[in-house]
Image (tube, rainbow, N blue to C red; front, top):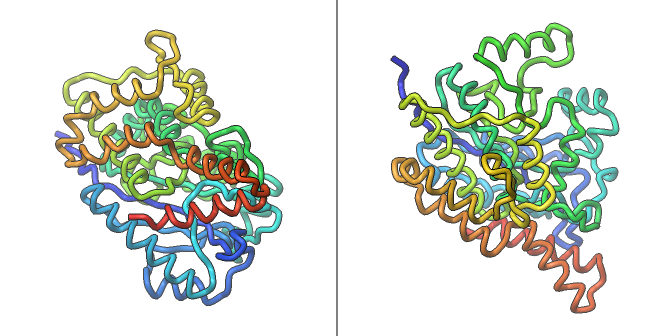
Length: 376
C-alpha cells in the first residue's frame, strides 16, 4: 500500500538587483557580493544566469506559514547584503525599463554554455520566476498528478502576474515574462505520460543524443523535479508581496492534496487536451484575471472571481487539513485589489497623469516594487 504523500513545500524565487538612485538594473556585480550572500545564507542563495539576478530557495517546509517566514528572512537578508554593496532588490518577473542587451552573463561554465547554445533567445532572458515544490514521494504518483494538475496552471498564472512592462513599454500583457520564456526550448505545458519510467525514457532520448545533460533542462510549466521527490510548479510569475507568494504556493499545495484525495476514492480530475489548456494559458498570459478563463465543461468564458470561488470550494477540506485556509482565501484579496501587474500599471499611469515623464513614471514603479518586495 502506498504511503500518503507528505505534501511538504519549498519555494524558490529570483530577485533583480537595481541601483537605488536610478532604479536601473546592475549590469555587473562586485565579486564580493556572492561570498557575502553565502556567508549569511549558505546554500539558500545562488547566482542566476544574469549577474543582475539572484536566486534564493527555502528549506523543506512543513507548512506554508513556515515557508513564508523563511521567504521573509531570505528577502530581508538578500536586501541587507545588497545594500552593503549599494544595490537594492525587486521581486517582479520583468524590470519596468531595463535593456536586456545591457546585461552580463554570470561567469559560470553552465551559464556560458547556455549562452553559447541558445544565442539571441537567451540574451532576452531578463525575467524572474517563482517555483513551488510540493513533495509527492512516489515517482508514478508525481506523473499522475502532473497529468491532472495541468488544468489549473493558467489559473495560477493569472493570479500571480507581475510583468506588464518590457524595455520601458506597457506591453498590454499582464505576464510578458511568458512571451520571453516561451522562446526557450522545452517550455510550455508538460506532455502527458503513463508512468515515471515512460517520462524518463523520453528524457533519456535527449540525454543520449547529447541535447541535454539531464532532466533539469526540461523547463515545463510543471515538472517532476530532477533533484527532489517533488512536483515543481513553474508557471507563475514572481509575486511582489509575500502574502501573494504564500497564497499561490498554498493553492498549489492544496490542489495536489485534493487530487490525491480524489484518487483515494477512485476518482480523477478530468484531463483536457493541451490545446484547450493552452488557450487558457494564453488568456492568463494576456489578460491575467481581467477577462476570465474558459470553462471547458460548458464551453463559456467565466469570470475569474467565480472560477476562484469554485477552486476554493474544491480545496476547502484540504486547506483545513493543511492549516492554510487563510492563505488560500487571500486569492480573493488579490482579485479585489489587483495583481502586482495591475498595481505597477496604476503607479505608472498615475505618475503620467501628474505630468511626470515616462522615465520618471517607470522609476516610480521600481520604487514601489522595492517597497512592496520587503513589506511583511
